[in-house]
Each structure stands twice: as structure tokens, then as C-alpha cells.
Length: 272
Length: 144
Image (cartoon, each protein chain N blue to C red):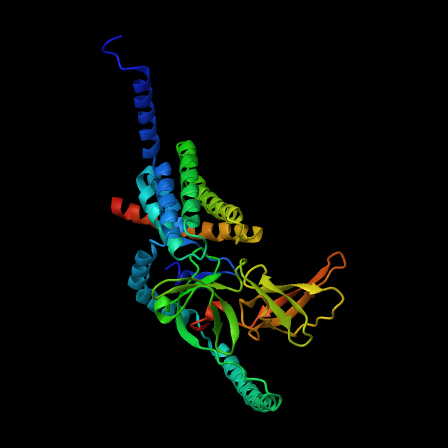
């Protein structure tokens, strides 16, 4: 027996050899590296490298994105429509200003405080969803500018766009309303009926959990209700396009036409 | 390109995934062993620009790439170009399905519908054909 390694040592050597081969396999090695990266990201250790990466690529991305927007962009017909729409909106703005003045006057009379002003951070969109489903975008403002996770993103005119899902030093990722993981408590402005806005197929939205028996008409306006506190009240989401009602269900669902064209955003505001 | 130009190539909700297609094409041409580090790096890029939990896109990409390589090794001697293109389509579908599955495991809503999976496979097939043909022409010119 002398000179021969004990059985346990032989076993360990064999297992070591097998394990070495196993862990050298590219697939296993890849999985291990990803597991380590997930762990490091969970601990927040990847924040600085990510920020450096976005700083390096950010300005380049912004230029390409803007060129792509221009090429994709605005045809003559669209320009005319926009001009017409602009004139219409200007009229509405004038009317609303008058209503606001009256509102403030009445608030003073009954002793209510004025609506609090929202502090907004202007940001530029510099890139869209990498997975090809266009349900998120990247903005050029981050923690250094006061952007934090969970903050709400709107476009000009108080139109709800989405929510900041990750904030880095000088960049942030925004999840659009059209992402299946976005859910907003909303109400129909005309009737006050509340529901839950979520993603439908494509870039469309639906408002779900509307009580049965309530009359909902197409063209009615859907705004955020402010319930649950994630989204401030009064942000415009869209207009009812089609009501999907079935007696078998306990609630009604309606398809919404979003007021924001999620694919044509250049500048957005983050509500602080 | 993927985050700036490609979104404007979208038809309905479907846009091609260039990173995925290129990774799969390189796996088919060079084998997983030869390009696994590049695929891993491509996966990191996907994760960096994605709002999904970090690592999920990379896991799906590695899974799809390894699966495609395994199938490619099984059939590469018997069949030709069309099958290799078919493998890209399969890889795209496997990637999307893996990602949906991982999202469900993480208690999130799946981001791809059945319709999306179908149209995405078709659209990516078209892009893969263009890229494959491009690569073939470049190689032919180099050989001449």
C-alpha cells in the first residue's frame, strides 16, 4: 500500500479535474460571469463604470439620434397639420389661462391654497429601447441633475410619458407608459370614472377595471388620478378610442389613443 | 445604431435587434467557443441599455447563442445556407422566449406578445438575410 495515494486524495484529484474542465466550458464560464455581474450590480458596484460608459457614448448617441429623428421626420403634410394644431392649442391655452385666473380668484375666496408649482428638469432623449420593442428611452439627465428613480416624466403640455426606472450620474432610463410593467391609476375626466391604465398590444394603451354599467364614450379624456401617489393627478394620458365591454366580465376595458407619440419625443421634463 | 437608428425602422411595435442578429450570425460562422466573449460583451450592452433587471438580456442571449451553436454543430455538415438562416430565426425566437420566461420568474410582466414573437422572427429574418448576403459578397470579393 505504501507509495500509493489514499483513496480520498485520488477522489479529490479526479473531482478537481472534472470541475476544472466543467468551469472552463465557455457556456458555464459565461453564466458565472453574468452571475457575478448581477451580484455586483445588485450591490451598486457597477454604477460608476455604467456612468463612465454613458458619458463616453452619450454625446455620440445624441447626435445620431437627432440625425435619425430628422431623417425619419417631418414631411410637409405633417408640418401643415402641426401648424393647424398649434393654432388650435394656442386658442385653448388662452381660454385655460382665463379659467385659471377665475379659479385662483375663487380659491382665494374660499381659503384654499394655490396649486403648488412643479419643479421640472428638462432632458433630451438620446436613445431608445435596445431590445427592439420601443418601450423605454434614455435621457441625458441623471442624479447629478436631481433626477431620481421613480420620478415622473412628462412632455410639454403636461402629457404623461413614463417614469424614471434607473438614474445614473448624468443619465437615466425611462420606462414608457406603453411598457407592460407600467401601470397608472387614471380617471376619465368627463365622468370621473376611475380605472387602471396599462399597455395594450403595440404602443397603444388600455384603461382597465372600469365599473360595469357606466357609460363611457369614445373621445373622452383620460388623465392620471393621483391615487396610490406614484403619478401626480391631472396629467393627460390620452383619449378613449373604443370601449371593450363584455357582460361576462366584472369590469369594462377601453382602448386609449395616447396623446404622446412615444417615437417622436426629443425633449421631456422630469418632475422633481 | 441599435438605440438610435433602429427604433425608426420599426414596423408597428416590431423593430429588428441588430445586436442579437450579429451575435447569432457570428456564432453560426465561428462557433460559440470562438466568439463567446464577444457574445457576452454584446449581452452586457443589451443590459446596459435595457430597463429590465440587469443580466436578464445577457442570460437570454447566451442561452440562445449556445442553443443555436449546438444545433448548428448537429446539422452543419448536412444542410446549407437556408438552415443557417433558419437558425438565426430560431435564435431570435429563443432569445425572446427566454427573456419572457425570466421576466415571469422575476414576477414581472412578459414584454413580448405572441404576435410580437412571430413578426419579430420574420423581420429579423429579413435583416439576417441582408447581413448574411453582405458577408458572403465581401468574402467572395476578398477571395477574388
